[in-house]
Image (cartoon, rainbow, N blue to C red; front, side, top):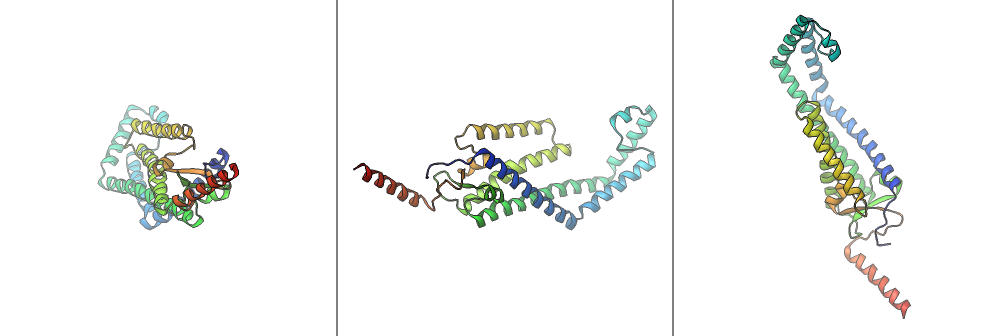
Length: 251
């Protein structure tokens, strides 16, 4: 049929979970590769060495829990603060810490980017009909709003602008900035707003579209029952044949 044949919810959820697992595996593999090439572990080990040197010199433990810290005497708390201040002011520690933060952002960004390009763009190009690994397994396809097959450019927009940039990297970078103390409660607000917008958009559109579908003007459909045309002209020609056949039967 040339009207929208929506894929069932369980198919879409199952396909999405399958794709998420595959993306995670590839991204983690790439991250480990980049970490090795860029010497990430060596830098974290060096920062730990500097930290341990200050702990040993001042007889403190930087990993102490808040409850244990409260049990310290005033003198021990003063010693802890002095050691922490010295460590925080250490030029090498600050340099290594800055490099670690930069490498973390870079490794995550490029690992997820390459995994997204491979699984959300290259694989669908090979399978056709916008099908990722999960969509192929569960019989789900993606097409344009007018029932026409996706072009490589539109598929790239859907995968990289929608899925990678808006739905993946914005949340990942916000979570990282919150972890590193760069962004506080405001980051939580942004994440909740993004999640809320995604849910409202999904449940209030007839085709249950996500943000990446809205940005790329695509819809997710059931592959077995949906007709996907190679061009708008092919779709119009098909509709014309159907109309003529119905008119002939009416005569």
